[in-house]
Image 1 (cartoon, rainbow, N blue to C red):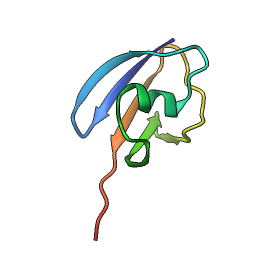
Image 2 (image 1 turned 90 degrees about the vertical axis):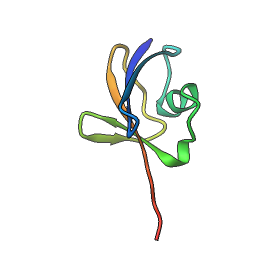
Image 3 (image 1 turned 60 degrees about the vertical axis):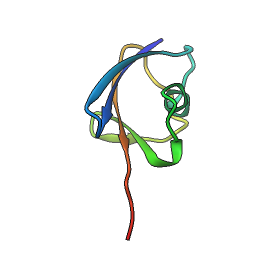
Length: 68
């Protein structure tokens, strides 16, 4: 399956080829990103790591910054 990804805050876009049963965590790993500091968003809804992805969909991967 192919998923279109918008990376934030970088503002870049990528097309990622994944296995048919790929989940959110698979996408983050395929992008070479750390899962504990990135959120996947479909539309306006954050996705859990174990949520199945859909062929042809576009999601946003947002890097999270925290601190005190």
